[in-house]
Image 1 (cartoon, each protein chain N blue to C red):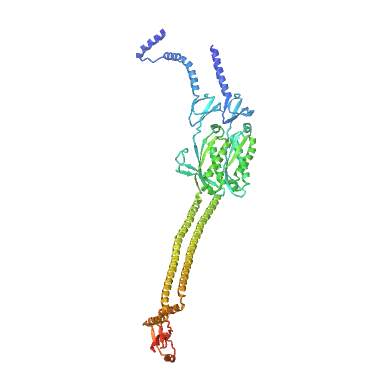
Image 2: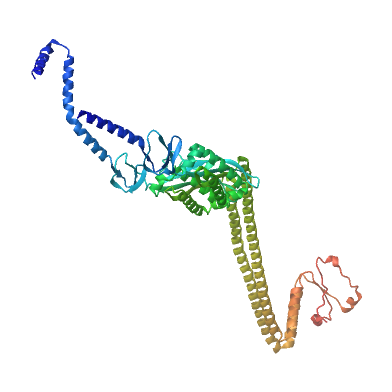
Length: 283
Length: 356
């Protein structure tokens, strides 16, 4: 009776020990391979879930199954138009073949070194074919696609899949930035000057136009005034002609007398002889 | 029993004597303890089992989802409220907050304010290496912006990407720089902001979906966009130049509005003066004509006498002027005298006149 209980207890403890050292779980974020005396067992990585191994002679190596980040150091690159730029890129990658990965690079650290070599050189090659402004603007996506495709191809043999190489920052070295600032400044100064002279141009135009309009208004008024005066003179002339025409002789006589009356004033000397009609009674 | 009783007796007797307890006493206590413990073994196990089973209950808050893993493998999603999972080591639960809108700052860092609060123009510090960007027309602009995001797929968020927040930060920087790099500096500084925000949001979402991060970009908001410090003065001068331009134009328009009405007034004065002249002239001529005709009528009735009268009256008026010098000479004397004109005596024009 007592013996059986002891055996039972020992069996339970032994069983528990075997079970705990044989059973292992792979997390959803992981993948794993089983190594038996230094050699991988099977040809497939283990998916998440509960798995068993032989205790003592088999060990488990876990790998991250998630997308991993590789943030490269910014690097100075020369573009095809001989300009320098600091390119900061990052790479998204993933271990897709843990068996190969384990034999070729073994650790994440090792993978980073490979990524650094390959992505960096691919970036350098690709960026060297474009001008600075192409890299900054419309060719950016094309370059990233090209580098991603090439890196993917080159890193496949390591059990690594490159999902995306993306240019994060494209900065200019300090001295180039200074020359850009200088140019920006000059451009803005030019623009400011242009605005001011445009203002002066418009102002001069408006003023000249106003002066012209004033001159026209006054000239029109002058013209109209002369026409009106002419009309007045014409009407008056007609009125005079109509009236005086009835007896030109009499008009001439009376008008002459009036003219004498008005014309002879101061400093006039008359030399009259008795023969003059005015003095006929003097004889 | 007897032995026990004896012992007890002995103990009671010994107490007043101050005798220390013997080993036998401990032995007795220990035996008692052993006897007491025996029924406990049967209770402890079920209690432990019950506790183990109870540890499977968990509550998912309204802003969370429960993600249950079975032996580490994703198994199911549970929603808000009380839930149950098979306890450790079979199943485990993660409860990420999925409705909370999170926020990341790019190009600046707020000072003294939690990151989750909404933006207000407060104290912030520019981070130049993040904010300075090259534009498509080879200028440099400083862009400060924030990205609001939330977890749209808890399973992807938890299991697909090593560091989703870091990934989002990278994607945000890459996307904004790409969009700014495709545009011109004036777009970023003035009217293009809305478009840039939309494009950046879409590009970020594409990048994040490509990695299956399970994150959703709610909004990209540009906060402070300005030219770099080195050139900001020149940019401000452009703004004041634009002001100067409209000032010049306004001044010219003021001049225009000043002189034209004055000119129109002057024109009206000139025209009216002419009208006055015309009317005066016509009326004057009418008057003169009427006068002439009236005199003429009378003249016709007695031509000679009237003529004579008018002549004499006129001569009388002329010669009665005391300033007029009169000299009566006989015909002979006139013939003998040498016509001599003393021009020097005449201050003004003198006209020797012989009336008809």
